[in-house]
Length: 307
Ligand code: FAD
Image 1: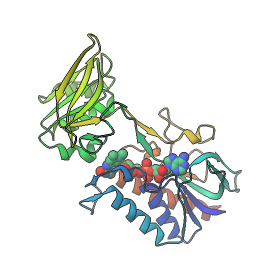
Image 2: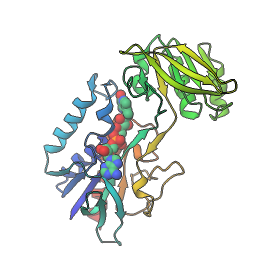
Image 3: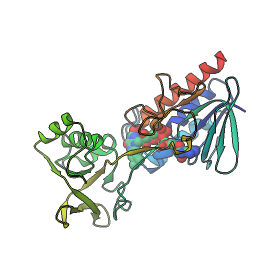
């Protein structure tokens, strides 16, 4: 059995593994795809002290750093079930492959995924105009015209944020009203370079083969198809935490399915910690996931020396 096992292989789990291994405890990492969301990222410019990198480079660096230590990395292992142990006993994680692992403490770091629109052009132009993270990619569209898809809190926050950087923002909302908090809507409406289009169903992301050059949508009330010319599309229709595998476990999840953690990163089950995008901790970013992962590992170590 491990002393601590990370489930997941993104920045949160990698940081947790380094911190745990440096305590000299038996450490394992079991991940469906080591690297996590970072693998899907082109340019990364906000990992402090690393002005420019890209996803594959950072993923390789994460793995290299973890491999400096005696850590058992098990890649291509998808966790399907968590069986918490009785107090003092090991916890068990079962995998799709049929394998199962036991560990005295766990750090759950299975991350999240952006909900996609599922329209033609979206996948084709991902990272070529189609973006999901305004904090990450907003500055790449300085002075340009962009769309934000989604009128919930994240969409409206993104539109307000982007309006300060880009030339013009058009926010598209499927329903006839936005769901975002009133204060945010009011702020958005006060901005001179923002247009809001309600009752609009996005049907296609247009491009020239290289990059995005427009968006096609249906005006739902009339059924009319319209097009706008723009250079970027920020999809803000939800971030889904990868917690489906925890649904039958006693780990407490929020309404949105995120793992609820305390200030030490502990879940509702003693000895089981969580970190990164999968948790209720706000602002889903690499540097935050790394910090939270480190914290969860230190908390796991603290738990071990007390039990
Ligand atoms: P993830 O990176 O999501 O890693 C989760 C890990 O868990 C993966 O290894 C996955 O395979 C594994 N996993 C999932 N389910 C299971 C399971 N059931 N069993 C086993 N393993 C499982 N952030 C920035 O700070 N700067 C940026 O420029 C930036 N750009 C981004 C661009 C894109 C396109 C995307 C999608 C995200 C971007 N982000 C950026 C956000 C950043 O990638 C995340 O905040 C960060 O990766 C979260 O780390 P994590 O370790 O919590 O989760």
